Length: 238
Image (cartoon, rainbow, N blue to C red; front, side, top):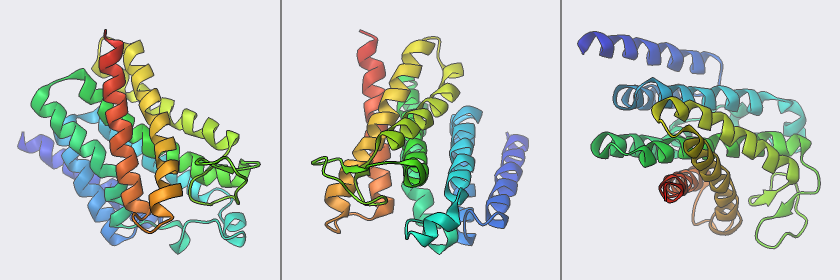
């Protein structure tokens, strides 16, 4: 047990330092990510940890992609794309809660919730960062009126495609944890995709009114996306 803890601690420390050196996270963000990652891998095992790692890696690539172009248009992530502890918790707290619930209740539906919450933040990051570059004719999700790229709550066909791809990518990591693989794949992908659009809806309403900020919006969307995934898994079981 101690040996595994030491190995896992070394792994998350190296990855945390790597994220700091690559300027994906600042010092506080890297520390928060390492702590969160250690809890997830200790209680949830390697698959949710790998899903979170994939989210971080794809998020870095998507954020840095054509960053200067996005910066010139005023659409780039602030602080040079470097995120801090608030962003880490906004994106990672809901998956952690689902992992801990699964430990207590031992239900596959909670695995669906875990991965659907990660699928939500992964799909949202890809839709946001790549949708700014490739998205054409974005519209507000609340009334479908034309909107400027980067507007809270703006969606586009291209962004929705990236959201779906981001969700199904994470869903693949959940398959080894269940015998009902098709049901898990569908539930996680659906939960993640709906979660991305919930994020847009919260952004267009609560965030635009100053009730939430980006980090709390991410947390709420990932929590609701996870709940959607868990419910979908349960309902599809008949």
